[in-house]
Amino acid sequence: MTELLELFTSNILPILLVASLGFLLQRLLKLDPRPLSQVTFYILSPALIFTLLLSADIKGSQVLSMVGFAAAVMLLTLGLSFGMSRILGLKGKPAAAFLLTAVFMNAGNYGLSLNQFAFGDLGLALASIYFVVSVMMTNSLGVYIAASGGGSALQALKGMAKVPAVYAIPVAIVLRTLDVAIPSAISRPIELLSLATIPVLLLLLGMQIARAGIPRHRKMLSVSVAIKLLVAPAIAILISPLFGLEGLARDVGVMQSAMPTAVLTTIIAIEYDAEAAFVTGAVLVTTLLSPFTLTPLMAILLG
Image (cartoon, rainbow, N blue to C red):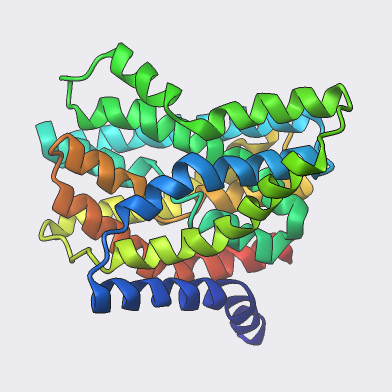
């Protein structure tokens, strides 16, 4: 019990405290988090990923393994969630909302911070690769799901092409492979932006949670929460050997897979009218419950 409390206070509580400041900020000043979210999405996150991949001691094979692993976790979770949606008798927009909340994880706001606290800068670098894949999948497959059949493959590709962080990975890998020295006039501004990313992500998490409410569909919510917080990390643990992930890489991948529902899903649900109230509420509930699942999982991985 003492070990669990120490893991919670050292790794998860700091995240919740910073997020709570964002929560209070939104409640008191009624700020719209969207402009700050766009700054983070288009500038800060790509800067962080570029900086991490350029400096971290990660091999190209590890990048490919993490990319394949992250995609596999989400696709397998999607298959299971689709089956559960059929069992629950969900169709149309409710089914789309259920899939959004069960499949896509908050690998950015929450996941990057937690992995940095728990596993250091190398863990953060590995987590950033998973984060990019999750953003790509959410902006492509997530958009397609939210459209409930009204979307197209072209829409999905357009959504993926709009993710700036996608381009940070190949650029960083090419520069690193060629051993290109970046002038300090360029590298230092990018590093400054990368340092701002995680604090801003946590403030955003709190601001967006402040706008959420408890969903009415309790049965649907319960199944979604169970898949997101329990089943997804179990899938990650089972398939990690298939992608050659071991040690730190496996621990980071499993932790990212165990994150609560992605905040980005609320934006997609609003855009496509896919039961946005339920999706936003699921983000709130999974985030509030996540310390009770992430703390023992961390103890197992670090034990």
